[in-house]
Image (tube, rainbow, N blue to C red; front, side, top):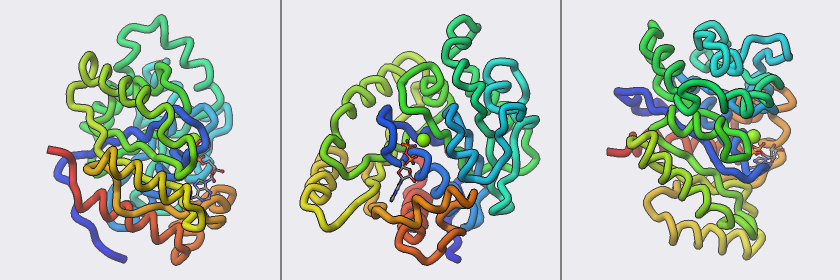
Length: 269
Ligand code: ADP
Ligand code: MG
């Protein structure tokens, strides 16, 4: 498999879109797997109480499991909760359990409530004996305190956009929120990457969405578009990325290509 350039410093991405079902988790897991396969050391932080990224990566996340909840709420070191994915040697996951559902409320009364993930991640990365090249934070479908924690912890935002009719609706709200975070909490944050997902070439509508998004965000949109593919949606039930589940399927190849684009573009200046 192709070797990709590795970044000098850890690139931390938040994968966000307040809409559910647009491909956040699928994108997080498959880009992480693709980069790990290409030789990068990659961490996924599951920040959605649903725990879908944890499931897809085949890591333990029963309710008793120490998880990202303990990191954010109880000051548990991230090193104590991180798990290796069974799929690739250099792919790790901080799992989410159902307890995270309460964190949104519990965070409200905590000190430095917007910075808790960032503080935990920074000490984890600085103490890690081997450097991580990429971190992907999988967000819940909301713009609450968990998502704010993800924006504060990251340098880059990756927005997956589903190639469907209402694709651009809600995007201005998301971008406004990111701008507020940039202004008040995290000046280094930028929307570096937009990925079009669930593309069906047979519909004119999908082609029009692709064109609209490219017109609005010419710099950010990746050339690669992720097709709608049954193999992509089947993979999580085997606790695998599509990269392992069906390496040569169009869905797998598209995520490998998107990962290569991200690696070759490098971090924003
Ligand atoms: P989100 O995390 O934004 O809620 P998911 O990544 O969970 O979205 O995707 C929503 C659903 O769509 C899941 O069932 C997933 O398996 C499926 N899905 C995601 N991407 C694709 C794709 N390219 N082709 C087919 N199904 C997909
Ligand atoms: Mg999700």
